[in-house]
Image (cartoon, rainbow, N blue to C red; front, top):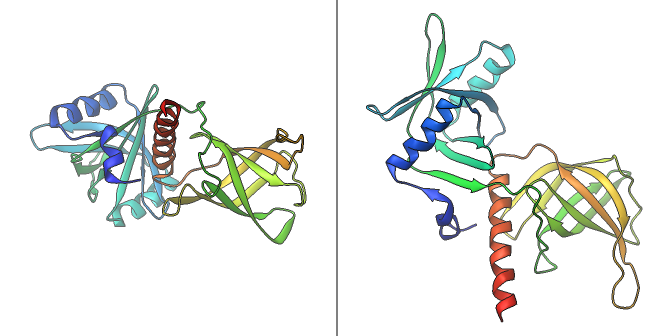
Length: 247
């Protein structure tokens, strides 16, 4: 998605950024800090320092968390994600600094220059306007040498429906489609695991012919930035659909 498309969700005013950060702090909301390489850490805000424009995050002594922590400290790019009811907040952080104390260690970072606020609509699905994208490229779980390129029938930020052509070996509900490459358009894509939840026949066309199976899939763990890309795609598709109805 372009920078222009992100403008509707971006917050740059310092007082507004502070207000959202304080809500995260006051309600002790869990945040996920993650790197582009996939390392992540669950934490929460320990302090919001207005005078020095800095944030502190709690560090737990859990061994697994400490292993992930080193990867975050070594990364130059970090993204923080948190949920407040139906709102998703996302912001980038500059390099973290570990501050070790006698009772509690914290991670310190400057305030984000901007913050993105997305309205979560996990149950809302959109149907793509074209046939080329979005699509999913994934190996057939029962035929390792068969690479599938499947059309997306509809999608939301929690899952999607795929068209499995009639000439492809069928799939059963309960399978995991690993290493699935979800391509929203020619430039935006990500990889995840799809959990196949239900299988049914597609609605017949105008001639009464069904051209394959409908695969209802839920997303597994999404990489950093994927949910933002999905939400932007959904919002933009909605806007285009409304414009087409007016024509």
